[in-house]
Image (tube, rainbow, N blue to C red; front, top):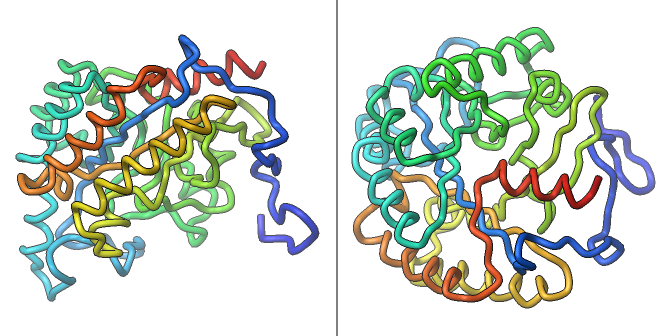
Length: 303
């Protein structure tokens, strides 16, 4: 579906819904803010397959280098080997369950990591095949359908769970993606970053909801791309939470953080995240939950 320039929305993926016209969203125990943390575990291939699309500004290392780019490859692998455990421990300290966006190549090639995450009770959501293979409008409908199914099948085989959520590699979608995700049985998608509450997507079959990430607090966006100093990043996390907490007294809000263990899991950064999360969970009226729990509750409030 191509963009249709017209008054109001120029696509039909969801309805326009200004927040101040909605009824009150009440979280469990009348919490003001639902906090969800998505841990990103994605594999960067040594060489992207022919015909695939990889974001030109993909982070890791200091900058892209000629093949083999060991600096960027090994920088990212740090997350799978070290950073993820530090990040999980930090979330556990604050009673925050992890929602893990895992791609097919990570699921297939890191069985110890999958077992460890399963033992810790993490929720797994689909995350494509690899960060080297984004979904784009260049794909045919058949290619994209096969891509989504390959990702979900690999995740199910490795984890024993059927994924309910989806986050595209680098937030990548085509104009067909929401429809194809709904057809594949996905219940929520995290690529749409345009709200402070979940909202329904428009699909011809199934029920699909958006769980919006606060994109400017994505650690790659903030720390790697915009070069926000880590102490300022901590302030951004707490300031965003405080604003949502105040607004949540009138109408519930969601704060979805998207974090990459190879970046925020570094020993000189994790303490700043720890302090920000401590600031959040010490307040009354905060519900820390997985993506599925948040969408299930939202759906029960809006049916």
